[in-house]
Image 1 (tube, protein in one colour):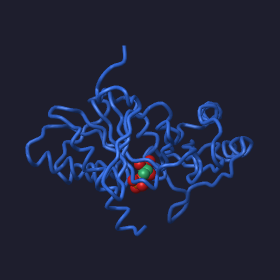
Image 2 (spheres, helix red, strand yellow; image 1 turned 90 degrees about the vertical axis):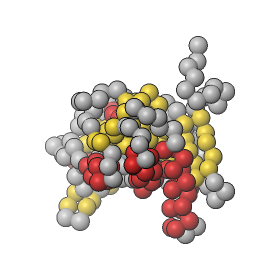
Image 3 (cartoon, protein in one colour; image 1 turned 30 degrees about the vertical axis):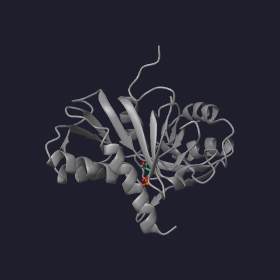
Image 4 (cartoon, rainbow, N blue to C red; image 1 turned 135 degrees about the vertical axis):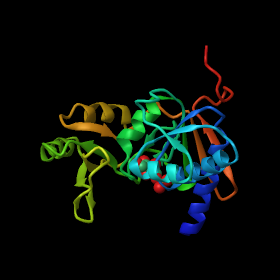
Length: 239
Ligand code: 5RP
């Protein structure tokens, strides 16, 4: 598939999810190419009169959103959000995710957890049968002691690479490092998440488990929508 075709699929997903947003909402704005399409589509609705505020998940997204006329607020001003929209690097059939190849996983997880609804936008190349098939699990760590954290991750079976930028280690918006951990296809993502979080210095992981309410998938034909509770209409609460 060409990059142009893949980007078209991202755009379809991003434009669809923007229609989920209603007047007055506090909206989590994700980071990445697909999330950018959603932010642009939301900005077009704002220009047409929609009143929302956005909580960006990175400095990059904050710049994009504010340059397009979306009012940007912090989670301190708005600790509860109505909806968060974000991309992903892998999506499995239970709508579990690997995120963070764009480097914003920690803020993305905070924003998703604070939101009434977490909707993920991807192209169909991100769908996998098991997490870890194609993407590493990014782990955000404190630079202090990061070599020891990497050793602990290797002891869990990962091939670990410190993410690099042009002039040294990649530094997140939170002034941390990222260790990209290849475990191969994951047999038990929940157990792995628990193991990762027990390592001193680990501040966040790219495993997003049991958080996703819906996934919008851009495909060759158009879009597909997958819901965590397919028998329930959007917004319904199970009894
Ligand atoms: C950033 C992320 C992104 O959502 C993820 O990397 C997908 O990005 P893209 O839509 O550009 O493929 O998790 O931290």
